[in-house]
Every structure is written in C-alpha cells, then in structure tokens.
Image 1 (cartoon, rainbow, N blue to C red):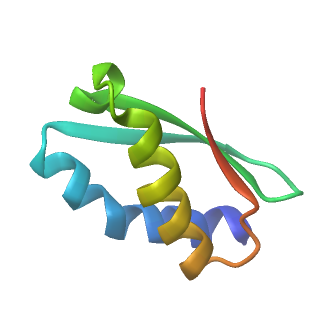
Image 2 (image 1 turned 45 degrees about the vertical axis):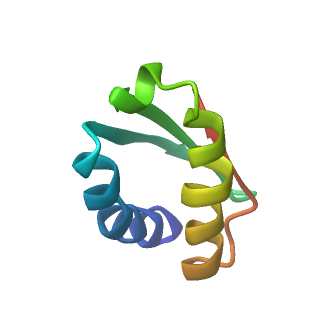
Length: 74
C-alpha cells in the first residue's frame, strides 16, 4: 500500500522532471519509509540532481505520503 501511494505521488511529480529532459524510476520502498529511486535522463547527470532530490522530490513526497522518511538516489 505504501509503495502504491509513493508511485501515485511520483506520477504527479514526474511531468516537472520530464519538462527538463529527466525522469526517475522507483526502485524500492522499505518498511521504514525509505524510498529508493534512480534518476534518469538529464537528471542522472545534472549537477543539481541532489538538490532536486532533497528539496523537490523528497519534500513533495513527504507532504503527500507522511510515512516517507527519506528519498535516496541509487
């Protein structure tokens, strides 16, 4: 159920990443709320990707799915 909520939230975030030529792939959601993603496209090589991950993706996910504790790029 948590994974489904995260997937739905990521589907709402994804268009913003795709506008800049990037995307992400959900790899795992652990029982303790750690979301593991792979940044792809332009996001995979962008020097600002860590800021996007923490200040954009993680913040938005935590707002929409309070059980998320952190988001990690793998």
